[in-house]
Length: 421
Image: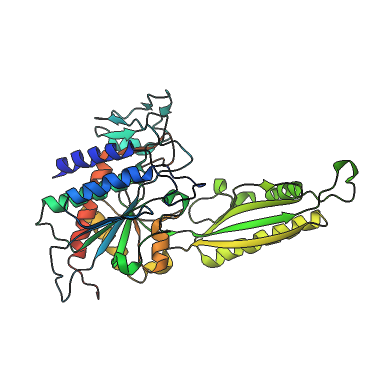
């Protein structure tokens, strides 16, 4: 079966990555770019060809489908419905148009030249490559990203469905699928069905990193919006009168603690991240990402930021400010305790697929963060990619096969369970 999975998941992946689906932060519609429908409509056709039920593509770009279960639970009641999700869009900051994947069979363990630019994917900077000597590795050609985030997840879910359809002896309860747009711009669940409509007991985003990872924590995330208000007068007569909001903004940014920025933190360290400075002498706005794994610590960062703003006002007499914090999502850990089997069965599925499971936290958010907060426990499972969002993105084919195997094992494990536990 492995060779069949390998062939199919690779074919699907190569077909999907060649479709440009880059989302757009400035886009006004949903999806933010029409091109995302190009892949969604293809997937709609392929789901129908696989014989799935209730295939529905909404006008806002959410594609859902159902594979009915083939077993009753071992104990009383039906096996629970389990959701599997991936997003179709790619990162807006790096081109995903005219992707030309390099398929390197029997990888020799050496640095890889990216044919489109002559740049080199170095083993010294990508030590995971050494684990795939003699295997197939897929890279970009150096001119675009690859799109494994998250078209690898899409290909793995589609291959998983194909395996279940082709092998009716494999046990599974009802399988609900959702492919979403605009995850990369934080809007992946903006138009998601209600949890009652989706009907899953738990769900999984297939959107993680190296093989074996199960991710059960994400940042708590807010966006802080700082407005600094100054006073503009003719610069030739400004002494003692002008309050320059642009200079004040630069001063505030300089006060941000250097050890608490994205570029200086790792693991479970939080940060403040200024995204832009917009405005003029009279008024400047500064959006900042505020991140921490602990909710109390997140609020502490916001208090610390306000303290720095007040120091800035002291340095620029007459300057006034406004600070508004907008909630983005909360650490999924706070919600996964509702159904501990969501994580424990994922870990067991990884073991059954022949890997050592690694429970990880994510320094970022997923659709699962928001779905967990809404009441649908949704941890994240690996899809195998590396160097996401980069022109040096790559993915090993064996990891994609292992992801499919993990999903098959996971479906079998949930087939033995019932909703009441």
